[in-house]
Length: 512
Image (tube, rainbow, N blue to C red; front, side):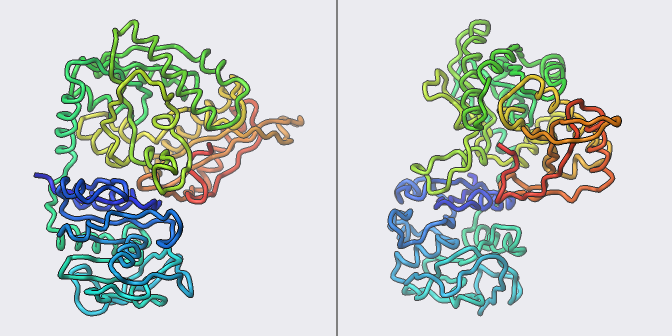
């Protein structure tokens, strides 16, 4: 039986990162709502439970709570930041605003011996992000670490196996954080490190077979990593019950249709149906500038095209999507989850409410790097598995302002140059994502001794581990100059290239 760690989500932007760190230990992790009843949590038979951080104060009106019967369930619990403050309050301690808020880097001083800090030095670097802190320990607890501004930076009740951390062990800025999580998951909880991608593939295939039975499944195949891996996984699970529909929405990268047809239709022998719907999408998007409207229009037309394709394929009850964990967390409404909404995604928030399909989402619990491992395990070509992420709405969210055919052509050509130069310079595999954005901004330039008044292209290159956070890449200046020179010389309508040096947060990776 596979060991499992349950994470109660209180709205932290790092909740997904906790899940990812635990999976790196080869232990399955599952995120559930913060208010999930204790009886239901016990029925899941987790080896341990982690209470995530969150943006609220435990005393704020409407602050997310939990079923306090959970503390009597005999399950090891680790509270992180808000999670620690919450059980500190529930179990008789006292939480109050800190005299001095702690944000950013800090030093942790470990006191005595605790299994949570096994094999760690007495001083470690940590990352804080909190305004409140524990002022009085609950009965049965003791402090096991302090920071500059908190005498209770880490606490434990070893008898009940309850632990709390005021800092975030899951983030990269806490360098020994994974070891702390390992001590909790593998040591205190006794979880077995037996979750592998091969095991995930086998269990997911079985789940898909149970869900769809003998029914037909439609999958919108874009050629990107997510839909490609979803297609390969579903094909392994249900074979010819899977019908892949490639919708050319007129918002694709250069030569995208030809590449998809070659790989999936002729090489992998999947049942592939191509729909040429570019003109219809562009008509529906005419004059639309708002990115959320773009996404919803694209989602609506996408589904309508599927309805049309069904006449050729035959009725299908199921629609498969390559939805990933970050897609889900960024698309959850505030009313259903304490996390703040960032944007809707084509795979999630852009779908019409009156959908005629039952969703099949085999990758919904995976991060991008895990999806790549699944793709490699399934034998997909490296150029597909390690392709940079591409948004579901395509170039529509990289072309700011209204969508026009002429501007799409400019963006396609510029983007092709970016990818070509990144690959030839061997930078492509070193970064998370590289692409071009076309701004609705014109500026004066000089080309061939003549005055020009043309558009501006933004070059965006970022590094990331899972897409939840990202930093801009310090790209080699020669490569940067070559990309800019080629775009301004080879792409008619562009006379200026700028480089985006924004990180996520505060920006997002995509511009819309």
